[in-house]
Length: 386
Image (cartoon, rainbow, N blue to C red; front, side, top):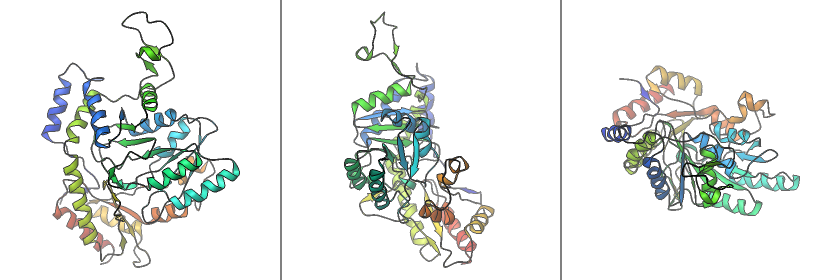
């Protein structure tokens, strides 16, 4: 059997036709497909505004800028994420700290967040922004985090890169955060090749995001400082970046969005099937919560070393040698050398570290067959000595 990747994007003939149409249109960079994509993603999540970017890291960066994060400010996030969730603060000259995860959800712990906020208020060092991360596609406890935000005065920047189309409290995610960020990297729920997007209900934040995305340049007369010299006239009113997505990428995204519901249904079916097939093995499977619907971007198990003598490393190597393209998500951010130089050390966030020491991401993607999934499970059982 051909090696099974941990994720694989489906690109259909309809996707190819959409990209071909964009390539032969009058617009390759900035055109109508972008606005359509932004509107469609915003509408899907019942938000007012979508601002697409070249990738999710750029989206996180300009979201921090729009929320006025700068030198002397502090951002808190989860250690269990890709480094971009923390790096976005440092791009703005701000400081970073972390809140450990809930071992069950693998998302930021609300109890630990509340405890840390109480101490931070006493110390006079509250965060300006908190970045909850919807790890593996499972929405965070945003209702409780919103209550804490209202009490302590921080802004919520939700890193929902794994969670396009996920639901929380019977509503699409995006309503509790000031800004929600999605990723459209090739291994995510849908893809634009590379791409990201910021969602918000705030028109002022949306306008800032658009400015920061495109060099800080505007053609909006109301935003200009000088007299208009002619129809060609524009002004750079702030320092921005070239973080724009292209019309070609947006065309791919628009085509992929038409299959989002079907993709979610398939991912959900595969995740539930994994739950059943793995029930007797010495692994911890992802939690299922009744008040939210995961996007199932990743299916991560944890090797239970209290039951099996086989280490995570040995299991990982056995699976890879057997043709199963497993991965590990994520090395805790605070353990990266660049963050250790900032003063973070092993032991600072023990729940994230325990999770990482045992985690393996199993293959899950909509085109995965039952036969492939059975092979993954049998190979994992073999690795565990079952």
